[in-house]
Image 1: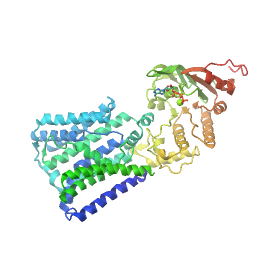
Image 2: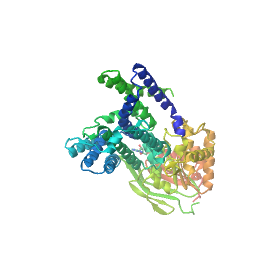
Image 3: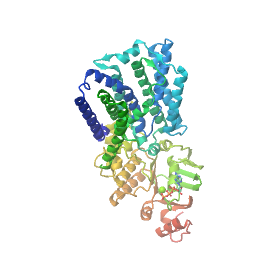
Image 4: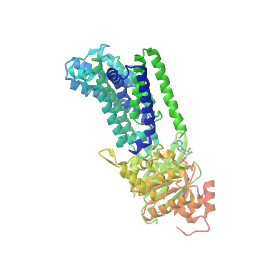
Length: 312
Length: 255
Ligand SMILES: Nc1ncnc2c1ncn2[C@@H]1O[C@H](COP(=O)(O)OP(=O)(O)OP(=O)(O)O)[C@@H](O)[C@H]1O
Ligand SMILES: [Mg+2]
């Protein structure tokens, strides 16, 4: 993969940061590297990581998706409501995934046909999807105690928690899409220069719609994992999580301008954020400081990236 | 050459950008196997005219005929479908992608939606060697390349596919002498294959030696359209500046 070769540098850097952070934390606390904590960590990271995969694609295309937290909630609520009336869990899951994908489709159509900037369009969807989730449930959280979701939330396979498999599969598939398919090539081209992409006959609007559908679908996939973990679907779930997903992408070194970066780095970005939160928790440091630290990490990540670009 | 039916006819083309009238009733005819020079001062409407043919802009008025049939060119894909390839003045390359990716942009070689990267790279190598342009590595992003190298990629892309009509908007502007000569030679070769070429340039010497016919635009309207050698270089320059046709005396009898 020639593209990966050129971009391997940032990947190495961000991996190094993650490894150093892990080593430091394991020295600071003997609990950090325990199986229990690692399981905990991977569960914590899973939701943000799945969202970050979609967000990375959107950001590489030069856009932004602020609506993923709300789409997650709406999809979860659809699942919860259907489970409530004894619909088969698989069917309910399918309906949830459809809900997220359709919300993404609406984002894509508003952005391309309506010529509304992604920031505005998805900001609108942030309100709409969250509002619908509250309308459907009248603010009530449904319990989801069916085996399928309990399995997702609590079981392990080969010693690893199930959500982790969701994350790994998501990143594997999205990475293949981005680096080996025509669709991925078009995402990079659109993010690089949309005007040129149009001149060269790339169906920009169609590909953009697909991009936002993918992001919506992944938000719904995150909703499935979330439902499993919480055994419930509170309509107010995952508020502000879109900002964490965006932060993960940025910390991973994906350029906010578009056209550059690897999706996998978003996973490592999400891991770094989760490690900071988790590490400070173990060390008994107030969660107020965690926010301060993550904020500083975001700025530092972009600052370091600028330094690297300048020295090119 | 005028016996053959025209490859391209653009009739009564008008185009405005908001309040700016870029073209008024402009005309263009291109025959197979000829190089047509499109001349004019900066802002005369040259690029706008060819962008309309390339599907990058839409005319407000007028019609386009390809091989005698009216063509509705609504977007760049329509133009490509008709065998129209364009080297834009702004080159139209994605700086974040490498040469093969740019060469095949919008028509990537693929199987089941998966890119055939190796095939594209090999083809790109061949296409670029045709112009004898030295590019160290095809993996390098185009952004990191020199202006001439970028122009070479843009030219290679335009001639790589099944081209019938080639539009070149200042194709040699960023090229060195040697590279310019290569482009000229390539163009002569394409001409022999019966391809019609539209050549926009400010280099009057180049235009004079290289084009079969010229059309001069001034303020978005044609001043004159005639065989190049009907005029002297000085006369052409004076028409570009004044925007008024010259009754030529020295080389009459050509029509
Ligand atoms: N996208 C656009 N928006 C607004 N005005 C435009 C646009 N494109 C061209 N124009 C205007 O149309 C006129 C013709 O421009 P055009 O680019 O066709 O000139 P040109 O003959 O190619 O000039 P040059 O030799 O400098 O390339 C100019 O007045 C220009 O400002
Ligand atoms: Mg021009």
